[in-house]
Image 1 (cartoon, rainbow, N blue to C red):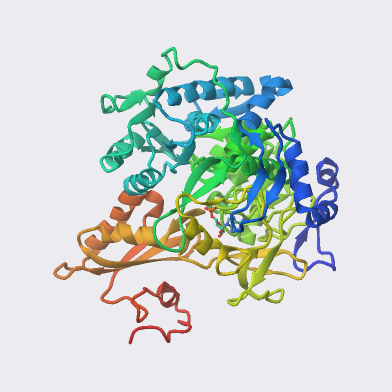
Image 2 (cartoon, rainbow, N blue to C red):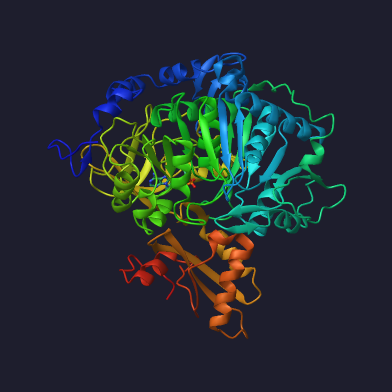
Length: 634
Ligand code: PRX
């Protein structure tokens, strides 16, 4: 890619090479963007028409009851029909859908679309035999193995709603999510592997289920050849279930309404418990299909690798659904990037001829730390596109990724989006000139705005709140079971617009620069955690009376968690206790939430109405001005 500084664009700009332009599906970004701008419904209708429907829509978008938008109204579909069934009638049937490699590299499993159908159908039949019906919730708590995708697809196939809980979460986080969703069934595995560590998933399920009365059955996929406790009547080995006649490879795909729920996924918000974000079959299917097609420009010959975890939205949209709907060959790796050595990913790219790599800035920074020698040992020439997601990518990491991994020929798709959006919202496509650290402009059909406290657009170059103006097909439909919170959280502060919770700037070229969250969400290594969850983990410890958690900049993780606690009277402060509290948070929420530090203090800054002023704690910790403290109690 030629690195030039054209006068008409501000800052450092990377233009696409001729080869990228020749190969690209969208050569004229401006033309497609302006077409979608003029006719939003028409744009999405054309995308939807590329897929198969049992019955087409009567109306593309129903705006009659905002913010409860409906897409493809009256259409009949099932996302699995487009992710799997439709490919079985074409040359894709025998193409690879999934290539998987174990952490230790000793095992490899591959599944064609035909095989995928068989595996998903068998699991769907097993789930059905446990009494799971359309609309029932199923919690999935697994590591990165093919069965996590089968489980999600099996639920979708029969119209059940999956709720995947990230395998790095621990007891309290899992219990809260099972309980809130009222799941009847949990699908898990004995153990998982991650970056050299063994995670005892089933043991965590056992602990969580002591407080989850709705769960009737647990399906356990065996990953390790060791015995673990199984509760008779409740726990079932998946490999045993597969020997039953019911587990045959034929299962009809349930015909659903386009607006029927597909999944819920819990994510942290500004206050209180994590929110169950609800996505539906029809719109989400079209949104993930079109964005992956245009942004990563997937082609039949690609070997696409989204290195996220299936337990986060990135995995839902761009490991499972988007790639399958596009008929892509995906790679899934069980382990992490640096175990046993920091060349683990580069080995995989060379071995499988990966052409597209999509990962997070935190992983890039982590790999950068080990130097160029590791990637340089491997042939990475198969790569043609790179991607980034989850947090702002610092220009230094961007340039390293571009030069050392992409050999200056692979454009980087910096995709800004959220669990709530379901699909990329601010993102380039391969031919768009890039600026390191900017996700460029909104995707086709979307308009973003940067507004001030009163909701008025700010001038370019100034920081403000990022809002989105148009509905989009894969938008969340509500917070499951809490329509009121949905309206309040996203649509009240800026009426008629979707409030993202992020702050950003727009430059004079119309490029967006995300600054970060403006609410009490902390992004640790790209993982979204809420201060409220960390605080409630802390106060669940018998020594703690009150707690506050904040995110502070962290070189590797983007943000790290810093906590302040007030002890109960009579409890003596000590360094050992502070350390115990760090471990306590990790035990109850998961290792990703382990605070960088826990400080024992006597007083927390609060407003007169008793709200903790985390903003003040943050400023103090960084030695910055405390801002407006007029509401601070005394
Ligand atoms: O702050 C933004 C950040 O991640 C938040 C959404 O987190 P989550 O729902 O966990 O989804 C992450 C994966 C889609 C956003 O509000 N974020 C996500 N992508 C980017 C980003 N910040 C800057 N640049 C990005 N590319």
